[in-house]
Length: 214
Length: 116
Length: 100
Image (cartoon, rainbow over all chains, first blue to last red; front, side):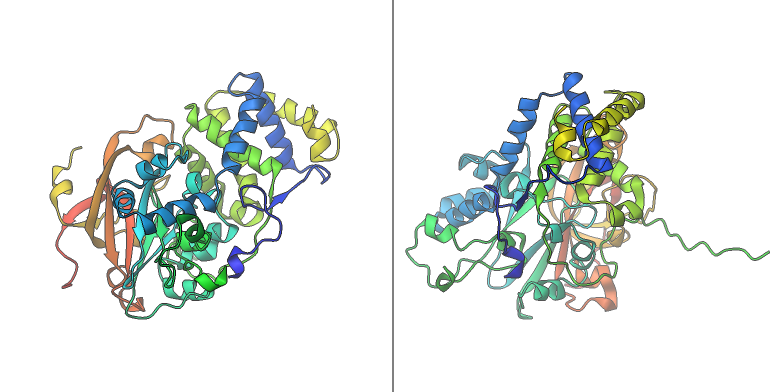
């Protein structure tokens, strides 16, 4: 799964690059100026900005994986997630802010995939920041018209008997896909099951890993 | 005099669904500290009611396709955040101008310029 | 303007308007008809929020469109679907687009 691979990950699961010794760009110059002005005008503080970065860093696909694994093992939670995915995620202890979440279940006959054609809306308050490809022109343009071709580029080839349901995040809701539980995982704990849940499987561009992959 | 045919149908550049495009790119860039700060400024300023995510998007859209192709994601964001904050009256263009000049005078790297 | 019929109709057609400015209705869905999947909201109108206005609360409907309806003969898998959230002022009650 090439899209999931990174060599150096921050605690959030995002690659991280120190940039202190690179030449200053115009836009970095603007960031520093805007940040300092916001602190001086009393809009925010340096501590609040650091805390917000920490909050965002703590959000990662591992949060979503825990939600998915619980849905696989707890039918009551699965129903709660279907009814109100925001409330169910918060009940598990995840700070998702004001995000309004809908969970979409993949089955043998239905496969869900998420895109935002107008910008790059993503369930960032649960899964962390989106991958670059999610924000690309190619993904945003093609997923609503030729989803099967796009999924094939991710190594996911779906049979004609599976209906593909594309979800364009056009407004206030955000989406998470609950991938199908892999075969051969009967009796697994939620903790072990969560290791099978990839970021891409929760966007719908992948499946959960098979048990022999871990 | 020949009249130019105007074929614009009102569809805006960011409204990409269904248009032709190449393969989905697989490269992933590393988030830098300054980008995380831009993200944090957006969350904080919008949660305090100074502008909305729709205000952010409106300016990004008005920046046009050239900005999408030539600037990075968080470069576009800081440009839009700045525009929205000026519109909100948080600071003036003159204040920003002076501060940017001061920032650049501190040093040639982000690290030097950011430690004011 | 209230559109009570929006909440009860089973199928909706997206208005085919092409205004300038910030809107959240994708152009590829304008003029297309789909089934109401669920009703959400009310949420403040983003077309007003974007310009520093308060934003009138509006129902938000998730509409499910078939690929056949959206892309016509270009649809490789006509029964695959696209769901999108559309604010009620963009929607008009409609008949089912085709036999399903």
